Image: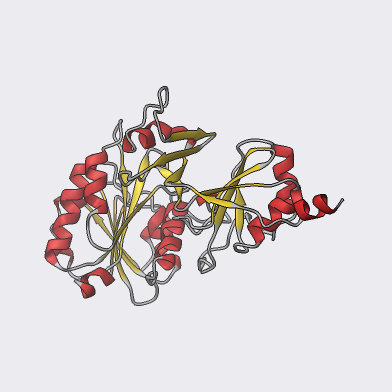
Length: 331
């Protein structure tokens, strides 16, 4: 009996792992495998695949086709549901569960953890500063987790309350999420007095969202916006190919946004013109893949100072490049 009591109250041993783990996007796992140089059919030494989690030991290339990165993964053995919950609560408050194994047991552990809100959010949304961890069960007695992750959202995903009446397209959900990232990264989102360029604007989902925040927008496309937006005095519409306009043609702006369908290399060339001009420092641009992922151009975007490349919950075969002008002040 004495031995049993000691066992029940032993201090759990956390084993830090010598690598990182990526929570893959199910539809685009191959892109992540390419970035990490992993053959899923023959993962090789130091690589483990747990459902949508890809673990790799040692130094790894920077990757972008994921929901979040488990920066400091560890394992821990436990005997009971309450012990597993106690291990996680002893590290921090917020934990999101990523299903891998022992699903019913995992549900019971989750019930013993503090509540994490996964409901659609109202916009604008200021991201909480408290860290968001991820945990899974590898089997009925083994936790796999990381308190430190690259995304502030549970399992790297966030959804917003949808407006099925006013916006002209669902593209507004991407700019909502991108602006939530802006606030998380320490930037200020557009508002009254801000001047924005929206390239590839038709039918106006991003323009609608920016206008709702009170910003002034120059919307550029070969096709007109939704008539309701065309009538807005805060929106200037230019019927043009945005990429043939020079930054000097548009002048100094607080934000340049693009959801243009084009090859990633062409978008990079256009963005570089804006950066070289010094007329804007803040950017939100969709890197739309025209077929296979262009990893070289993605890395070039990520290398621009002040940049973050993410796969948004609302993205499909595309990534979103976010760049804050605060980087210009520190160079």
